[in-house]
Image (cartoon, rainbow, N blue to C red; front, top):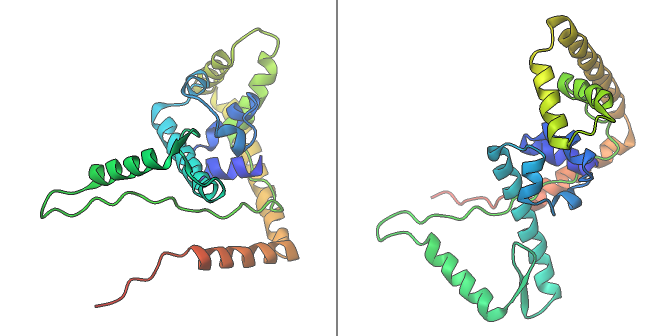
Amino acid sequence: MTELRHTLERLGLSQYLNAFTTEGFDTWETLLDITESDLTTLNVKLGHRRKLQRAIAEERVHSGDRALSLVPGNAPSVDGSYRSDESATESKTSKRREYAAPDGATPVTKRKYRRHPKPDENAPERPASAYVIFSNDMREDLKGQDLSFTEIAKTVGERWQVLSPNYRDKYERQAAAAKEKYYTELAEYKKTPQYALYQDYLADFKAKHAPPATGKH
């Protein structure tokens, strides 16, 4: 689940971590198979869906690039299906036409997939926010009430909005304590060989995947 958590944090979607894991999408690999109807059921906002869908599409394209060298004559599409070399060529041609610019205009460059380093699985877990702590408490209270996931999520959100300042402060204090503990553990972790190894990995990753330097004219 560490990779899933870090990926959602990178996308700015960490507020959905508990929702995804509760419904069984507890790894990034399983989340790659999530459908539009699943996102609707999970009450994911439209703008957030687009962020997630772009990341999933990029991941599938990236995985497809590797599969292409393993399965000659077939190219995997974004949705995981396969097509012949001829149709793949037609698709590439149509994409070139789609991104071709009018005469005299600046060509439109298609965004390339950006690789990201693997998360540090030895690092201490990031602390939960006040809302996540509150949400976990409420979900325990709502168990056994025969509510759908969407109804639970809606109820939790509504209760958080009307939560009294005293109760909200309680969760804010818990979150602050968790954050303080996290930074203490992180400081200790930075003294370990595992942290040094991960920093070496990061440096090597950045060197391998750094964008090519443009020559000065």
